[in-house]
Image (cartoon, rainbow, N blue to C red; front, side):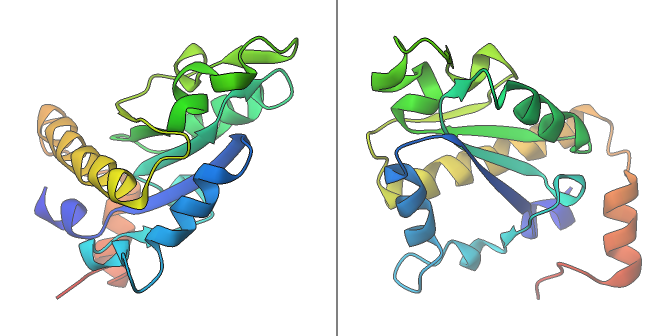
Amino acid sequence: MAFLKRSPWLLHYDASSCNGCDIEVLACLTPFYDVERFGIINTGNPKHADLLLITGGVNEKNREVVKNLYEQMPEPKVVIAIGACAATGGIFRECYNIVGGIDRVIPVDVYVPGCAARPEQIIDGVVTALGILEEKREKMGGATNAKEEARRVEGVGETT
C-alpha cells in the first residue's frame, strides 16, 4: 500500500553492541544523509513501528525484550539486522552470555553487513526493507490494520 510505503515508522533497538553501528544509525538521521527524506519516522513505540532496526547481538538478558518488541509490532513488519553482531553475534559470539545473531530469536528480513555498518549501507538496507514491507502488505491482501487506520484518521505520518 502506497500510504504505508511513503511514511514507514522505524523502531531502533540496541541489543548489545559496542555502539559503533548505533553511531552510524544516528548519522543516518543527520542532514548529511537524511534518511527522513524517505518519509521515515523514528518512533519509540513498537505498536506504531513498521520496521525494527536492531544493532548488536542477542544476549541472555535481552532475548525476551527482543521477542517482546517484535510481538508488539503490528503486521506487516520487517526486521533489519545492522552489522556483524546483529547478523552472527560478531566478535562477541563466543562469549558465555551471547545467544548469537538476531535471527536466533526472531525472523530477520534484511541483513546489513559491516563492523560498523556505514550509513550508506544502512540506508540501502532500509530502502530494501521498504520493498519487503510492500510485498508483505500485498500478500496480506491489502487488509488494513488498526495502526494504519488510526494514521489515516488522524493524518499522522502523511507526506505530501
